[in-house]
Image (cartoon, rainbow, N blue to C red; front, side, top):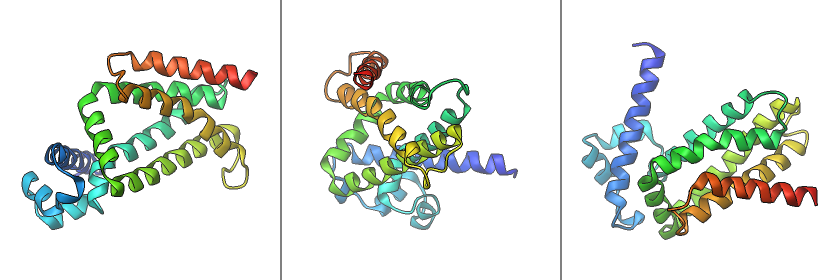
Length: 196
């Protein structure tokens, strides 16, 4: 089997395990669902589960990690003439669209995060990894090493604020609103403040 097919199969199994876990966790506390239950519901062994995920937290938040890597690659691929912040904002649009397209899953994960201290800790780690990957992408665009120069990390933090605001606003009860419009308003608000 080629490496590409193997990776596709691996991602398909990871996505399936994540879906099964979210179904089990819909009406239960995160801490009450065991890895054995998730594995059994998915029709795999506990050992097979751990071939795909290092922990129960990872199975719930795997989509955040995948999104971070795709976002980094999309930022690097943006036109060279765009400012770093504009490149991040343009690259975020497909991510927002994916969240909206899978709104039930997005909202289920948010509810789990709100109820589980263990997941909130893991989410903070995922968000930090996202910021580092965005800083890496910005560093590449500017020809700077993110560990040696503060600008890539600073710009990554600034650029991700409208995304956080848009997703939080959408999840907090404005789900009927166009999340792209919320993101655009947040980006415009940030731009006004930066010019002020």
